[in-house]
Image 1 (spheres, rainbow, N blue to C red):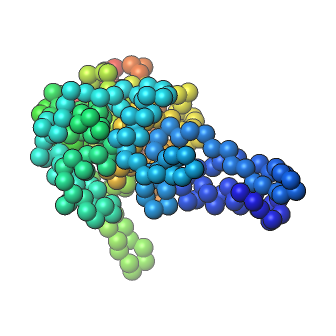
Image 2 (image 1 turned 135 degrees about the vertical axis):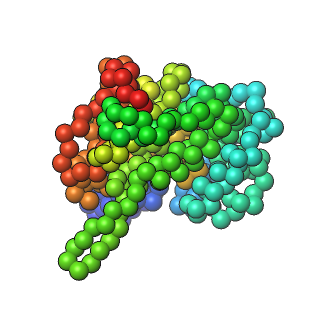
Length: 337
């Protein structure tokens, strides 16, 4: 790429690329036969990256050609790394539940995929990257679209922390992505509105910001250790409108509770990409930032994010502006969650 602009434009050029496609390549200047060139150094992406038109493309010779998510992940599995969620299974579209397709279409439609309600099932699954060219589903596709043999999200409500169970967790075995919809509805019913007064004006807000609740549950699902049989546990305490979310599996990739806002790592990149393709999460690593932002913007204490003694990671929110709550693992505290 030739450039006649001053050297100071290199950073602006790199920032412009980052704003458009979420890639921040180093830019080096070289001179070839008297022509000043800016050289972009771009590493292979660990996950698909949409271009400015929302398409996934890869290099074929001197040109860029479109590719669907499933083909992209199959190629990545063949040439680099290993992600169990991108591996092929024996399941096919015959194993996909109608309820899972309904929920997937709904999530995609509300986030801007206008044809999500009319596109054929196979085409939709290919767009999401879970149906391989050979007709087999990936492990990530099986998790979200085929009947589950266990409850993956256990949501309950207590009167106070460690107190009586007011709303027990339901047995959601047999459901797939519908488990997320059920949990979403239950949380919506307990996280009620409160009235905030400012002068003569009144407004109604949720006790805990809905965006923070959503990010906590989705983050716990995407980054959990799926080899552990325990479900993601979601516990609402009615007395202080506090939410606790516990995800099986501790921090990975060198991340700690002190570096969550600075480091980015996906335990299962293919699963994280599926959640993004569904419109459920945004770019990798923005979820935790959003949780903090939503809480602090309303004068709440930021969420407490810790790793428990049994290698769980937990999130705690309180609707109060000041809170003395501590994170309690259900395995070590006897919580009904």
